[in-house]
Image (cartoon, rainbow, N blue to C red; front, side, top):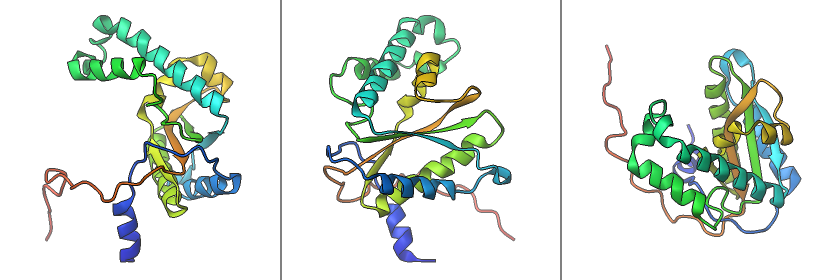
Amino acid sequence: MSDEFINKIKKRRSIRSYEKTPVEKETIQKIIEAGRYAPSASNRQPWRFIVITKKTMIDDIANVIKNEIRKILKKRFFLKYFFPSLKNKKTVQFLASTVVSKKDILFFDAPVLIFVITKKRKFNDESCACCAQNMMLAADALGLGSCWIGFAHFLGLNKQWMKKIGVPKGYHIAAALVFGHPKKRPSHAPLRKPTADVINWIKE
């Protein structure tokens, strides 16, 4: 096992500030190729990719997501019975601050947005998570930054836009990743939480 590779994993950070410099198509293809070689349940390779490098469309998608969040916030007193997280005051405040922010705090002005989509089938989402991690590690190895955008799942509530970006019927967003040249990189990884460790080790 290569210590160098393990150190690469430890040093990879989520980047939330990008240069405007475009990412070359060949580099994007290398990142996707790394994702395609991830492990998957029964080797189904259930992922498909939608690549967006058109900045105006990325901005439009950010606005659509904000609008979907607004709709949820307006109905939160009813929806909280189905989504317990909406009972949490901090969660609601966080969603509200995202909606009103004039800065791009959804995609961080990244020049590349990639949706990893899949069909609803057992273990497909887990397989796509492996795919997404491969892509983020590949980006780091190629000198780029990346970040998994959880808020992008709200786009799935808008059927018109799902169709507009080319999501086939029966597919959903498993992961949304942004890539780009980082403005700066964290000097070191934050300390690991002592609670996020082995809690039991069963052996002979």
